Image (cartoon, rainbow, N blue to C red; front, top):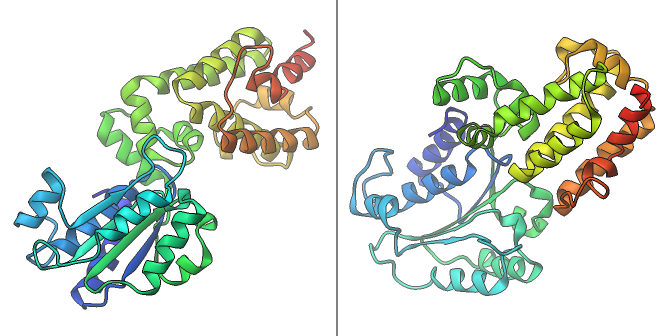
Length: 325
């Protein structure tokens, strides 16, 4: 289990040992820090036949780890955009009846914030009248999208982000690298598992080269059109990298305009580049930051230089104006 998940796991185990587990747990955690693994461990421990120990190899735990458990139903959106009512009703039906091991039944709903209204209402009815010896575990990175009535009928377990140094140490140990991975972590939205995926695919090198090219352009030494092309390419590898980099850059410039020193910024620490970008009006930067958030939420991607995200965020116009092209 990841080090930053040990505390909520210990809290869950204490409740289980005291026989005080609720019928439903709402696990709230930022995306990309392993909440699905933690939720799966909750479910394994609940169905364990020997007390829930992490290293248990009882029949129930072995089935969960190897081939799935007949008393545990996992609901995910898969390739769909949401979790629909049919999938929810199918899962709810598995909670009824005698469990195969005589111990209990569980249902795990990953990304519960993606449930449709109909699916949420179907789940709510079950939470109002839960079957005995059942545990429903929901995970979410956006609790605002969960019905308040579902929240009120679940016990909330919150996973908080540790110091960034803990994520950095984790990544160094997993990659055998002496990098601090600080820029990658900020760009990913503090998702060490996302960064680990980038490293394994070599995307982190492209991210850093884009950042270096950005600084070069702002120093008057790089080509703006080449930067735009590289940023478009970054999106194709993983949209999170483009959105995250743009938001981090804009945030750093806004912070610099407000007197934050370069060494305390997220990804852009070159003073000459910052001095050039500080000429952009704060309102324009705020609008760009809003656009990044909006486009990320809408899943909008580039369709070519003329109608791309880069142009839409005014990057080319800004840099051409600032560098006198």
